[in-house]
Image (cartoon, rainbow over all chains, first blue to last red; front, top):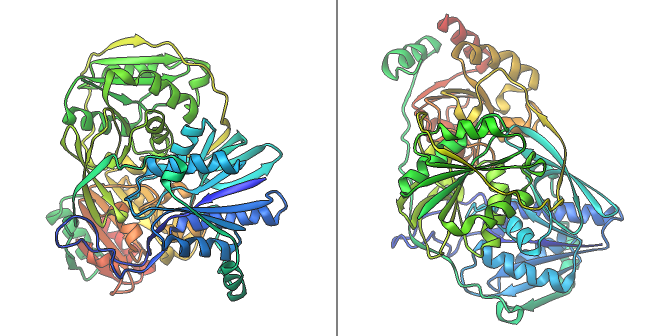
Length: 249
Length: 310
């Protein structure tokens, strides 16, 4: 069984992003980039399924600029067997990525596509669900537990009211939530080994996909900042402020 | 052209997030219709018809809509989308699950978690955990949108929409619900609560979390929330989590106890009207957004606070 894991190169989660002076985008020059944390969880889960003898091959795929190669190498250092880069300098939106992934799925025929539930840059939370729709496959999003047996995945999902368990026949798209696992640290030998793993490069035109953006960003801005208020000395002072000043209790 | 809001419901009543989505729809402008897809869901449809601002309720009642599986729900929405300029749903775990599937099947973009409507094709949405807001324009013929509940008032009652039944689509029989483990609580729902008491890793254990925060929540009629750290440490279940990937809340009063204030947490609560932070570390980032900060050991402060509240 093949598992395909899409990975996105995003601004590292520790970086405090800044808006460019012309308000066209956030500043991406000289900013630390990393694999989207949810995608890292997805890679880890796929590798664990391979280690458990359920998956036979884990393929990482990334779409974007040439430097996405680094993200693929990271995925291969965690344990993915090979990488596919869909190289383009065009801004990719979730629908375009889903179409690119569909083209890869038709070629690679994975039984499971395991995505991160959302990317921490655009916070869109769309790509996995869109791919499932385009493939007419079942989907199980926001997974905190995945059990694969035969042609069936049993997935525990994090939902607003608690947890829910669904069964999906394979092939299917699953998306990883925070508590699915804790990704391992890539060891130095594995990082070295990842450099020698196969990395194939293609592009949207070769896959026959039109990736023209559908949404135009008119401007970006920093939201109105909250300012720090006051420090109160003790519980009595706090209760008084809440009653007489804020009037919220 | 009309707007279709896909209702979230439990077959008997309409969930709060749908009311906020209806308000967003009225801001876009046009006739607002509501789709209720469920099983034996007549009561939910009647409740939907009473929502102010809704002119028509479409009901698809069939056994295979009982659990609102994303595949069946998306197919039904797509089959009925042609008459609409906009499709809206709340940005809940249900809306986030099926709406992108709808967008893909219609070959249009989705605009996720809008917080403002600038015009019928231009919307504001947070990116980078709410540290940046983007204004985006859609060029697609149908706008598929999810709505951040806290950014729009809830639509009121007093409507009298007509109810029409809609033929059900086929059962795609793809994902199958096995069961749900829902957290049972007498407290208000986190996303709709006026007051929230939230705890972090500073509480030290699940036992302390409940022992110290529950009396305070009871006293204030508050919902209980938690930081990711507290959930990861197993103090409370996942549905308590407030933050970028948990719940987005904006109560009148948010009391953060033993929460340091990672940006991912702040993303979920910084639109609260009044924020109180109780933390022993005076340098904790939570104090930068708190209206009232109390530096102290929560194990001393909380009992004193309870006493003061009488």
